[in-house]
Length: 291
Image (tube, rainbow, N blue to C red):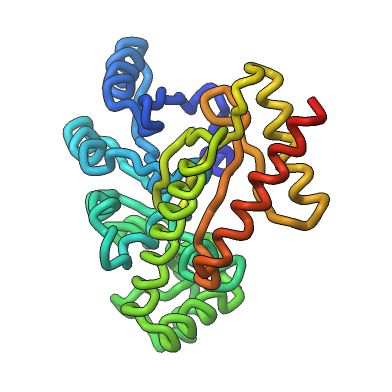
């Protein structure tokens, strides 16, 4: 996002993560002080609601307090995790979203919509109008004259645009908020079930516990360490793909290679969960024989 807006890498400061992969509030505050002492002007905090790798949610409410106190804009990348706000059992995990100044939200991820449907929500619509709004005799006439109600072309850089929102509108009309909430809950519960099955098998260790439908893990038979374990888990992922058994991507977490499962599909039954876990376990043991 920063690059698209024209900011150089040196203008974007990375903040450390805590042991549970949440944005480290203490490090953020220290960087704000250090930047201002150097004559720099911090203006925005970017938090994440549902990291793609681990499903972690940053302490958004606490970050919102800092943003208000320091006169900063708080943007939340909720592309994946913002949908949990519709959950019936887990909405409390993303309760801080309401305190953000802006939220990015992809409907094509966990609102079961078609690819390319995304949203930007802002607390004050006037910011979009003052930034993107233009006056044109033609467009004003097409809108029926000047109106206090903003038109879509005044809210973003796009003028002519495809009807991306149609797929989301149709999904909400057909399924309804109640059912979508249950579908999101199902994904979160499924990840918990995957984690429990892995923990019940010898040789598997959880790297990041199930959060928002995502769990990361690795196979560790106890016979090697370091790069050897990394190669084993990379090979497990490659073999599963090659043999068309399961689409389990490898991922690097805290410097080690593991495997990641994202359970947002509602078509997985208990039997559907058991079979892939058995295949993963069987593949892991076979791979280890080759090392």
